[in-house]
Image 1 (cartoon, rainbow, N blue to C red):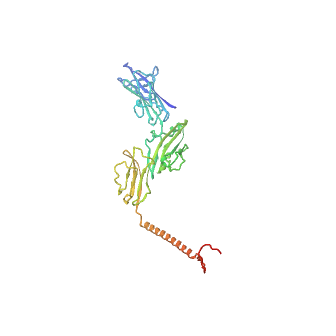
Image 2: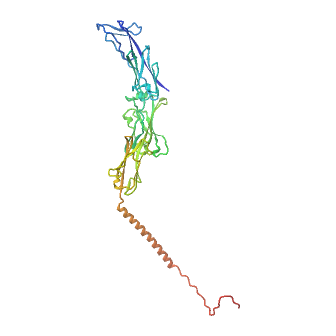
Image 3: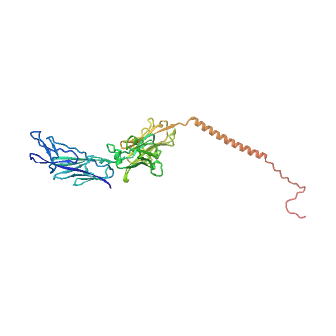
Amino acid sequence: MKYVSGFLSIIIALFISSTAAGDVLVYGQVGGTVTLPRSKWGSERVLVQWYLGTNTQPLISRNAHGRETTVRVQPVSPLLAGKNLNLKCDIEKIVEGTQRIWQSPQKHDLNNDMRVQIKNDGSLTVMSVTGQDHGEWTCVVTYQGREAFANTPVTVIDLSPAHPQPIYTSVSSLSLLHLPCFFSNPPPLSWSDSQEKSIQGGRWTFTPSPAAGSNTRVVQTLVNLSLGPPLAWVVNQKRGLDVSALQRENLNLSLTKKGVTEGDRGEYTCAVEFQRDDTLKRSMRVEVLQVFSSPAPVAFVGQEVNLTCTLGQPLTSDLEVKWIPPRQSSLLALGSSPHPAHLTIPEARDINGGRWRCELWRNKTKLTSVEITLKIERVPMDVWLLVTICAAAVIFILLLILTVILIRRHRQRVMMPRRGKRRICRCKDPKPKGFYRN
């Protein structure tokens, strides 16, 4: 894995007083500022000369006020999050009793950080740096109660921390969904620093949740980053996304969307691509609260009405819903929370109509809420009149059809020809039945 090494060098300045009072050891950072001690003489009009090592030429020549020299330290080049940071607090000539201690920008105990390795030679290694490692690192050198500080700024290019919990919103044409993605280091990361790491592009992708009504979890590319100039988003999906944050603030890759539907449930990923196939990513999950009634938002008096408040999937154990019914509702006292996600009104009445609100809570924090307007109506008189007229019309038509059938049958009988009656021949001398001989 590629890493960046920064070396902090500590020089030793040896002061020999003209009164032979003894040697004083002073540590100072290369390029930093050091104050060399001096003894007070009876007169300030004396020439004081400082020599470095065995040089015969004075390094500093000044009166008794001494001299301070400041040189800017070259910072470590920008480092991508996930890479390793190597620093070394190097002393040219270390004296027994000298100690070196590292301090992070956050001033936390490095001994308890499993990512940090500190060696006896003053070298420091931080594995997989994050935005929390951005800032000024300090090597504190102590000797005989005196301290010297060697500082170096470290720039870590990292995105804003990912949400530890899902982003909760609700179905509404007025709901605003904000998807944050920006470089987290203060002061804001400059485009030149990013260009030093050769940004190759970026994108936002969306993977629908099964709760969004999609049978397949196909990754969709919402927008692609065009390096320009100027830097701009190229929109691939017409989902009502607002990409103007990138134009207002440099390197703000956040997206917003006004008007949320259940189809917005899923996982969103912001990715920035650098050279050598390095990529910074931040993923966030969006949960959308929805409320609906069955059989419909409009119900009649006496009809059973069911209200459902859902995320499209069963609630986890740390979540609960609270129903806020209309003030005049007979279900005003629902008891203590948690309330059921499915609420049933056995026989709807006029007082149950109005605005119902479902709130989603985690412990004592309200995450989001959604509302539905329930209308309870009486069956109007004109409807009953229409039903009566329709029933009478049906009966009339049936009677008419029956009458026509009877009339047709009667006519068929009248028009049918009569069959002749059998004629019986009567003989003058009838004989009994049987066989006779002639």
